[in-house]
Amino acid sequence: MLQILSTNACRKGSNQSFIQQITLEKSITKDFVEYLGEVGHVDYHIHFPRVFFKANMQGHFIMSGALNRRILEVIYFDKDHSKSIKELEDLLANYADKQM
Image 1: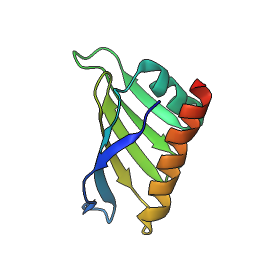
Image 2: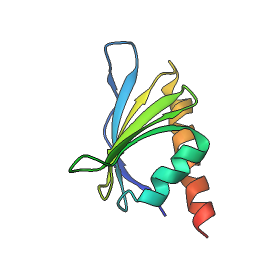
Image 3: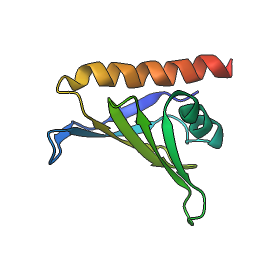
Image 4: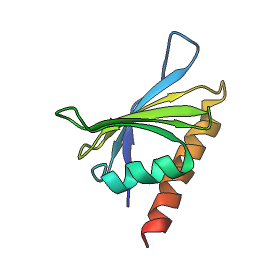
């Protein structure tokens, strides 16, 4: 189960997006990345020394991270990024439900 342990304040990106770094309670697994691929578009880079991914979730946000790490960087595109933050929380909760 992946739960958000902490977040930093959103900062504004150059294209009017909002960027946030999220620390998860547990490390990102291959299973989680595969789940993201079921609900969005994922670029999964396994040929690098540190396996990483970038996932586009329905145009609302892009998240990126590295396998076996606990940090996600999320770029929110909606002006009301609180709605996208809720969508991210729902995404993590749905993944947790899938694991049970």
